[in-house]
Image 1 (spheres, one colour):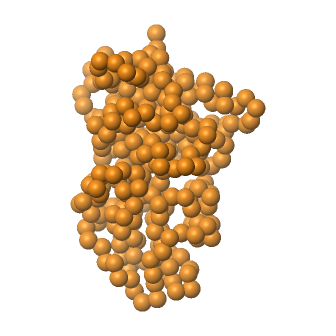
Image 2 (cartoon, one colour):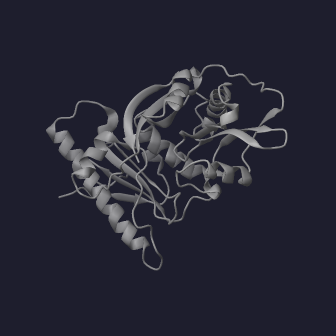
Amino acid sequence: MLPKASVFTSPPAQLMGLLAERLPSSLTILRRLQFALRDESSPQHARIIVGSDRGALGPGPTEPRSYTVAYADFSAGPDAQTVLYSTLEDGQAVGDGGRSEHEQQLACVVDELVRLRSEHGRGWRPPPRLLLGSLHADVRAILERTGRLQGRSSGIYDKWLFKVRDLPPAEERLPDGMYWGRATFADCRTVVARTDIPRTADFLVKLPNLVIKLQDHTPIAWGFLGVDGGLMSLHCEESYRRKGLARNLAIKLLRESTGYFTDDGGEGWTSADVSKDNSASQAVCRSLNGQTAWVVSW
């Protein structure tokens, strides 16, 4: 019999404490939930699903030893996504019994995702499928065997981890004719036009971001922190490359904006999902004193 899942409309304090203890492996789901707590416009169709070795999450004499958590946005549109974490990802040795336990939790949480999607589809049109973002390779391998996961031909990334306190110094002063700014809605439309990743300007404009602009306000380099706190959409226009602009922008953005998600005084973890084929972005991550930790997919 599968364990019973708990479903929440907002992140419970107990869960946030459990996830904080599992850093950095729990980083993606923890930052996503922290963003949900901060974002007043969080989607009304979002739910947090938890399955644990204790069954339903709640008050009790003992904390769960193993658990699986999903944050699911059942809204329609390209910006909706689901993030999933299992304590299986911690990298500790897990015997056959422990793996079976985690597989049961994953099955429980996926069943609840399917049920909730059907429930939220009454009276409106839900998305045809849920996009799992930054999915750990070990968890993906389990879900693929269930037949419920449809993999993409591309979308394999290295998960790079950074500590804000370990970031190198950045050059605050920009070349003549440039200045630091924040992304306007028009800037975000430019960002959308520069990528084939399905995102919208409405989604990007509410994210922590940093832009380098010319004096006529034209954006020439930019970066964002996603809803999972990770560095995303780092870009520099072709004619302004090889000047260190993207690197300096990434350092400044991570140092100034990671605190949006956490109040740990700037000591916190942050991350980036980088394609194994993107040598330029891999080089930037190395220059930020980052380290590859595991493999994820979308």
